[in-house]
Length: 589
Image (tube, rainbow, N blue to C red; front, side):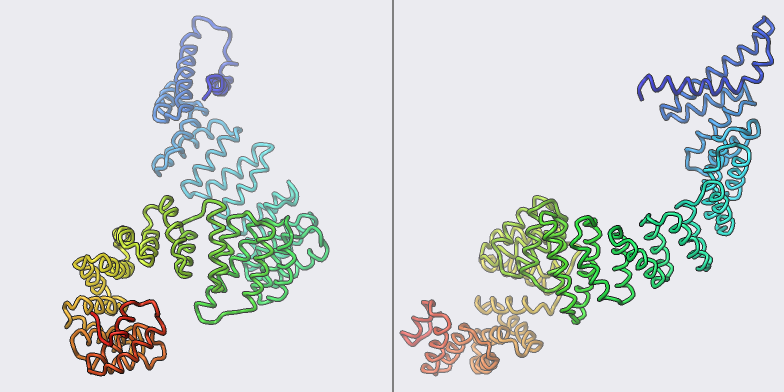
């Protein structure tokens, strides 16, 4: 606090204190020897009080209280000192302190009944003690005693509301209106109180009275309509809004926004859409209001798709609104975020990815936006972008496991195995509490460590994943297949691949794995049957035909084997080993 301001405050309270002595001072004559003891007493009080004020201003309330109490000991009939003690005690949170504050302010009011600040502090203390009846009595006494305090009628009415006495509150608001005129505070509060009492007609009358008094105040009409809607009177609210919009076509954007929302709430979707189309073209309407509207559509579309019940007409309309929004606010980050959410809800991944990317380029965004962007880029196989953007996201969110997850997955798909294992291990550390995610990460670590020929780490990761979920089909498939390639622990590989096919009998990739494990165990006839099942699915790849050829070769059908290899070459002409097999009519392993 500036020194000058400090001195001004001291002078003010010094004058306040001096005033409390005025009555006795007027009765005394000019100083004489006999007056000295009283003069000394006053100086001591003033000194203690001034020190109390100093510490009060410095917010050292313990010392302030000590000096006020010392002043009170010298002058126990000083109302101002009682007031200041009550003020200090009321700043504490304990109920005992508030009780003491109440006693002190009561003493102040007993000694001086025409100081409104005493009454106001008393009311505040009683409210803090939840003694609303006493608070109300204090306000009533102040308004009755001190001229110019009618404005506190609103505080009195509020106290009655806290005390759950709505009828008394209404009476006070009526009194306030008779003194201060019709106004927003009393009218809106009375509307709410009447509705809580189930007196809809009286609430409507209050709303109409306020609107009639201020016919051009759109916010009064909107407030009234909102109160009606909250109390289940939506159709009545719509009637008032429609009337206002009709009478004020150029000055009713807020009313039209609320009207459109209420149309939607009452299943009048076509009327709502007609209004939204014009409102979204209006640049004077706050962007946030439009974002809320379109966000609601996005949520509905998302829920509809989640329940396999898409609404193409609603999707199309939402997209029209969004294009209007993007045209008006091309640089707004939140608009692009909303666009991403909307397109994602509608299953339009490329458009959603475009909008999220625009959002992260245009400004600071939360983690969810980055996560959605990385998810969509992963889904669209844009692995270079995933790596680039995940590295940027890691600078902003270094403790988010999903960023490491996407980075690791993208590097794995790009065959950058060392980078993949580093990112995935970090993702695993940060995901300890998310068991399902840890299992998925372990499965990818198994793949990555196999690629770098760290087989012990690969097996350990796969085993960890299967402990979390023994039916993790991708892990069962890759683990058993890689064991067959290594010709290691083939019995385990067969058990895993057999379980895989039992639960997924028509999956060509899983059938191929099982057949190849049987091949590694030299169970060629069983392998042949399984591979034929895979091929009959109609989704066979070059690998299926090449493996089938190898199986036939081991069964002695060289011609059949070459035929299958040639089919494989038709799907994959760039395999040197395959070409060598065909040329020399023999297997190379």
